[in-house]
Image (cartoon, rainbow, N blue to C red):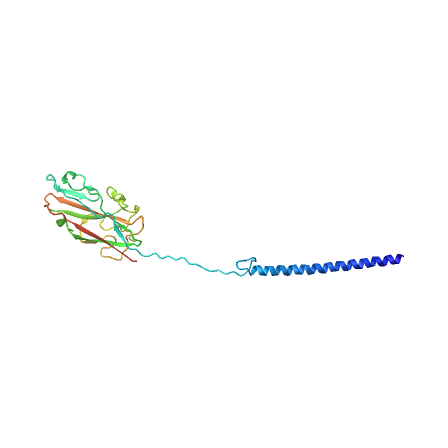
Length: 260
């Protein structure tokens, strides 16, 4: 009986060995199917439009441009268009009546100027463009003291003053129209020469105001917002023998030119 039991045990061991091999084979087959299915699924996902699961996949780029062009603008503006000395006469107790558009009727001769306007604002010229410019003026009409005022030794003068200059009379010009208050001189030549005619000068029919007289290529009147304005003041001296006349007018035309 003992040999029969040994044969049975051996058969059981052989069958168990076969069963394990079968399971191992089946596991390998199942793993292969799983891996294949995974690759198929990934391939399908990659080919779905707009889906980018895997890093390192092909990409595409494009570009865009933003553009802007600033055009040259040459422009000046006169913020004070009229200086009206008004209508009046010189009191017989005085030899002259002096009026200055910077400070009005000059101190010490107020009683001499009967009825005339106490003018306190000269022409305020501002560079309202974006280019540095030349600046000049021409005068038409009554542009001499003899024609504008008349009498013995009359006075008709002009003067250029930076708006930033604290010596500009009462300072009322500083707030009479300059869009941004100047903090420095507006005629900025290479050597900072400043404005021509910074002292009162006899009226003329034409003058270059910033740069060399006669030059049209010195663009020194700046477009900088804090240095872009100048005041042209007028001064009249009316003698006591000035003859009555109709209203006299001097018309000033300011011109600018830029490199742009």
